[in-house]
Each structure stands twice: as C-alpha cells, then as structure tokens.
Image (tube, rainbow, N blue to C red; front, side, top):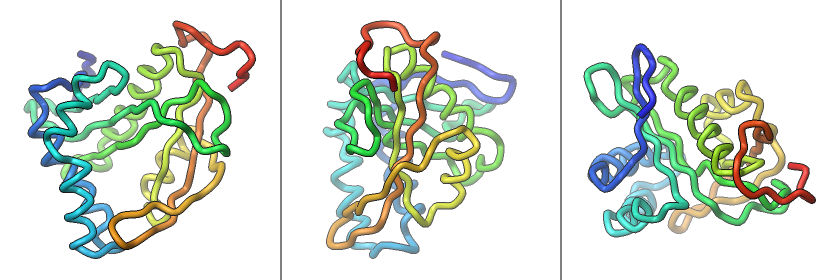
Length: 191
C-alpha cells in the first residue's frame, strides 16, 4: 500500500472484484455515453467487466490492478496494466499496456488520475518494462491532456470496436526510466 496525505494506492485482489466490475462498467458507460449506443455499451461492459473474467485477471500475476481510496476509505479510481502485444507504432518488445485508468466523477480534478498514472508507471518499471503504452478515445480531451502532461507521445491511431460501432482511439507511448526498471530486459531494445 502506498499513501499520500489525501489518497492511498493499493494493489487490487479478489476482495476488490465487485468494485472493479461495478465501477469499471459504469465508468466505461459514462465515458462513451455520448459516442456509442446504449445497447452496444451494455453488451461490451457485460463482457469486459464480467465477474468471472475479472476474477481470472485478478488471479493472473502478470495483470496489475491499482486502486485508489480517499481519506474516508472510499474507492475513487483504478488503473489496470496488461501485458498485451503492442501495435507496430508502439515499438519495442518490452512494453506493457495501461488498459484502463478511471476516476470517479466526484474526485476528478483532485490529482487521482495523476497519482494512479505515476503508480502504474512505477509498477511497470519495477516489473522490467521499458515502455508503457495506451489507447485513448480521440474524443476524450481530458484524458489526452493528462497523458500529454505526463510526457506520453502520440504515435498512431486505430479503430476500436464496441458492438456494431467503431470509434477512433489514439495510441500513445512513454519510455520508462531504465534506472527504475529491474528484471530482464531486451538489450537490443532501446525503448
């Protein structure tokens, strides 16, 4: 557990299953409500945030969930790191995806996103990854600004399918500090 004056970060485990399913699903719907149809959103979230799926992920040591709680011990956000094959524009073989970063509406603008992002980067670096990458919806300017301020570079775009619909997502990447990384690294991979 990592604490600041206002928030604490904990590593997600099975005890957090209900929070991750409910909060993740609602956050996804809230984010894409203006862009996608409700039936497509409901279909996607029923699959992506299904409790059996999340349980499997929580038991997988290569997948990392980081949860943020406020001073009242209320969960106010989470980040998910997933080792997945990066698109070609990301480059490097030692890369991990920041697949999700959600902040409760009541806590937006309070530094929760920045805190989760910093801890996700540190976790990835400690695991030996040299690059962190992500997809962000082209219409989500707030998230894009968070990543740009944290020195992520825009490196491409691709369609992202939710049900029958597809929207453009931007691909961003950031090299991780070598001095923080431990574990095996590909010496031929400069990123």
